[in-house]
Amino acid sequence: MSETVFSCVSVLYLSVKMEVKTWCHKVA
Image 1 (cartoon, rainbow, N blue to C red):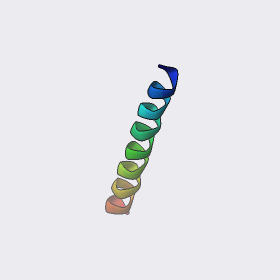
Image 2: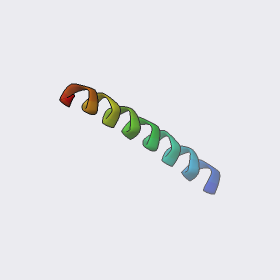
Image 3: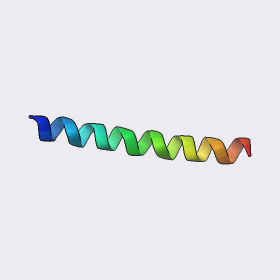
């Protein structure tokens, strides 16, 4: 159970990280 939650959190974290990265590039 906890492993599945960790996986979901990791995927969410990575996607958010990528979105922030592209957003920063757009602003800059």
